Length: 291
Image (cartoon, rainbow, N blue to C red; front, side):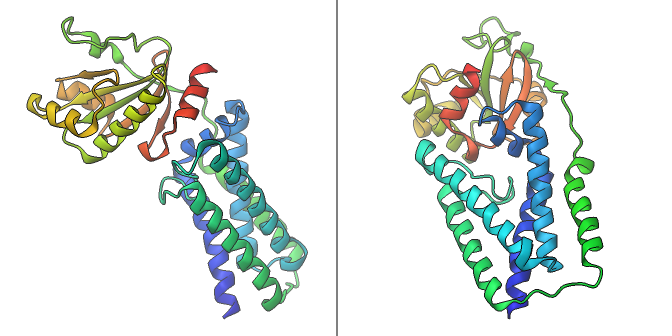
């Protein structure tokens, strides 16, 4: 039974590392939102993921369980819990804690509960699962640690290149163009389909943000049939949020990509970040806009 618990604990850390690695940009932005420069944030995100791999593999191979792995795992989880408590106090139980990347959204409170459960599991394993040292444990542990910490840096190298977004197409029609200049300054621009349920959920969030602070730099580019707009605004109550009813389907898809809602943080025509609507929070948006 004890080896099953150890396998579960190991699996959680390895799964957590993999889910962050396959979509690392949102995880990097957790560090950027703390005020950490982007280059350092990119390094910290990769080191963090590598350390999760290390803990998961050390648990799986039961390297130095009592001397290092159990204490390090508990300390790591305590630090994460303190961070999530800070988020919960200052931002509320909104958005995604980022525990499992974009694969499994989880609120900060649920993340705290998960961490406390894993800490308890560690303490139980310290009692019921004895250490089983390997003959060549130091050499094997060193090799595994190097591999684990290297994985994020090898599979997702640093990239400082940001993709531009051609917003000129939104200004082609002189009778139907954005009421504000989106090509300059910082804006969170959401591309939404009028008939998309998830887009409507995102629009309701934008309404909430705008109602709290009308200086929040949010903008909606809406696409769909003309007769859908009335129902969209009747449902979302987001008509006061700055928006554009954009009719060019091909241009819309080139800007948004294949899936909507597509939400981009745009700085002087450069896409700095793409984010799921489940991770939106007005504090982070306004902090970014002021930086």
